Image 1 (tube, rainbow, N blue to C red):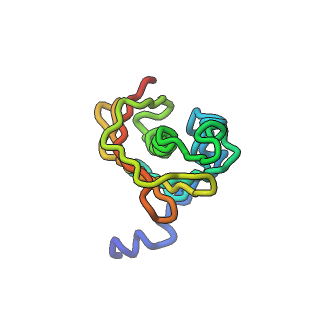
Image 2 (cartoon, rainbow, N blue to C red):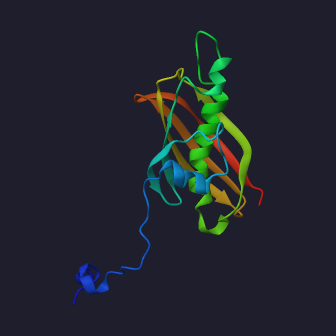
Image 3 (cartoon, one colour):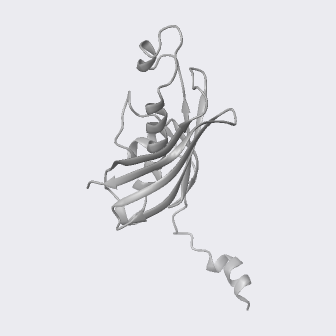
Length: 164
């Protein structure tokens, strides 16, 4: 029997192997990230490749607290919150790495971040974050980008450190 047919045969299919989830609901995200309202900035994960990348959604709404003062009459999502939202999507990848399970990652640095368009209430921020490297199971670097309606809103490199 050839290897291909063995792999494809029903007898060799391991039904006990856990299925890899490629999407996550808000409730599932809250099991992975420590953030809570008003600082949880990821509503949904729409694509997830374990150990590599995640794509998350943030629905920007006018009732968020930052819009009371940023800016009255012309609400804009602060750039620092866009970066934080991208970092939280990156946290989904980092918290599920087997060698660092249960740890808390914090920012260690932010490089080459640029803001390309304004993000306003009613926008849907689509954030793609890819793991570039992880060293000594303590430090990681990710490439992040955020888009609205297919237009680049922000991009940059995010560095993380495992604190415990």
